[in-house]
Length: 417
Image (cartoon, rainbow, N blue to C red; front, side, top):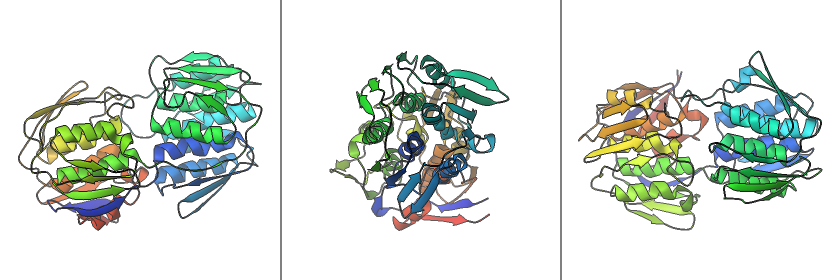
């Protein structure tokens, strides 16, 4: 397996361009299954999760082509309505095919999902919502079997906010008979992007960027073309990269308002950030001040930046607290950060970090996608050499991260395994 070898304490400088948002692209890829014809997506990143989803769509019968950052998906000849275990077990986002297949073809067979091992993430909200829309759901041998002659609009209120369930219900309800009212819906930018794409396809969805969505079913949709939004998690990761190394970098092709919660916390920590229309300028800081965070659904602090922010707090002056409210078990990176001499104590979903003057390079192992990014950031700031193994996790969600960091002056290289 490939590894990253990082020699830390180099200053970064220059400009980095942000790629398209993986978490926006994946559900939109599955949304193309809702109609026959060729849809075109621009600003699509080259990531393992994207490649895996493309392979799943091909299994279903779609034709998927990629040239540069433009992807075309022709769903005309889809005829296989199963998402097999060997694919779904590797990527949780495969569950997104459930809604589109059920809505267009009246049937779907989807394995229970996998992905990053960051705690229990049940699909009950997805299945309960599909039942309320009129689908028959059975569970057999680890597979979700869904059938429906015609989905019917209804009112659905989630007991808790779920990005995945919101996306699946949206894609199922757009072809349902009548109107669906979805309450306590996720407000993440990636959901807003999906709504925009579905409306371009001819769907009738109101309430974008709010917690109450109104979906009026239509009889059919048509293919669409759209540019994907920039990745706010990649944006935030590079903002923290500048902060943890006391460096000055410019981050372009992004949307600053999508990382407002992180910007606020970084400024409280003593980091100066200048915002333009589509870029961020992070200025060098002399010290980091300890700041508490509590992860929340958007527009709160994102769980996908928790690990990276923890790496920064390891070098802050004082004691900080990080409360993880989305995935309470998402602290597997703590043990690896402690190998770099971080001082962290975890009780249930609360981590207490006592800042240390310096981190020390050591061999560490990535446990999931965002933990991988946290270890890279810590390695950039640590004294000496940090070797990060199992970096296939980071290739799921960051496009050529080592090349982008090298262009900024980081001493990081990929060693082929």
